[in-house]
Length: 327
Length: 304
Image 1: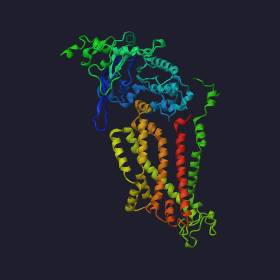
Image 2: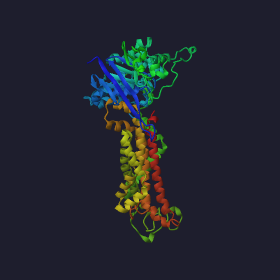
Image 3: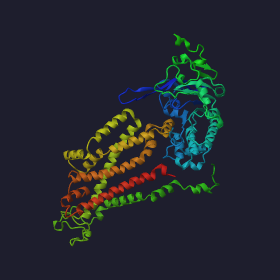
Image 4: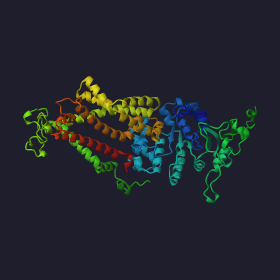
């Protein structure tokens, strides 16, 4: 039982994208050197724009995709060497859209007991009782046991997905935008449920979200992703009070306020999100950065350790990354 | 939430939400197309099974003295209730031939559909689920098959190997799986990228379990529709082959063969073609109505 439950070091995942019939395939570095340690019992949020590689990272951590490079360890063991069933008992996902994450042909009971069936659980006579206990725990009335997903509301469906993920008591739960497909009124119910379950079942959460309010509410630490890299990793309070990376600042400024007289915030992110097949040189954020310096387009920034995490930006580099730029 | 009544007393919501079985029954019986299709098919099926009891004469029994008796509705003086559908050019009772012919049509339709369904579904699921190289190979096989004209190949094979009922069935089954493969491949592609397949992978399901319990039930709708279309297709192809003289061999009573045998006499005795043609039409219509109905009734989006 180590303190660090998930450990990723320099993880890469490259997809080959075809550019056309007669052109060679080009690499897309969806995850491009992610280093991350997740402590047992913490809630790590991963935030970033669409297309920054959050979901690919989640799939890598779930073992659904093999990494192209680097090393992911779960409880100290490389993920790709852990047998499929054991892996399933350790890490479970909760998906964004409860309308596509439940098989429409199966009843709620069949969906929730499937993990027990697959794990060849020893005692089939207890499955129904355990599924109903789990349903009670996630706030589903047991009468829904024989219903089908399309007879449930969005919130109820997401509860079914949570029950399925938790019935085998995993250590780590990866939530990919767990609330963004739900009504606002249901979102907080689901988030509070996830909070309560974490205490009760001793879970470690990895929450992928672009909703900063959710992140601030749930997370103990936050990782900010940009073009396949984690540009800033810090304690939640620290990150929201004193963001270091210019991209984090821009993200925090982009949150809409309830006061319409303030207008739509200016994020200074003038240029559009770059094409990940053709990322900018040097620091990949430099075309959009408010504090860009001459050498930013030449030299990629190093990982600078800070309290509770790290930041990748020349502003915090001791010699500002100038050594190679000048040479 | 938590609206469970006291022991044994149903709550309002339990009364207002009928069980899924009763809803299913309601949808099946409310679907007229499905009921008509199943009804006609059951009648034809019963006729085929009970042919020896229903047919008034031996379908092969020739008697030239009573040849070409018109059916009773023709108003001709020769028409008689002994031969309600008349007789053919060799004096065989047309009703008996029609009844026995249904056996051959149904047998060929079902068997060829099963053979082609197994081949096409296997190829389609493999291509859709595994993608990449497997998909390329399967696509090549499908394209190869599509470039062969079914009737010509069937004619060539039957004339080389000779023709028996089972050779016709196998030739048809091995030739008409392309639509199964194409449809199953594309529906598998759609389903395999849905989150519930990823969830099943994360739960630790084997590939076989994912294919059989997550993907197959969700492409069943399309499969059923294709199966009925292909069954009808096989029956029509058999009729065409028999018409060309290379399917079921005389004197066996096949509906296609009956049309073929009647074609020389069709200007003066059109019922020889009209009656088996109408029978084929009713059978194909019934199969297609049933396929559409089954798809409508089992689609999860209609389950409320």
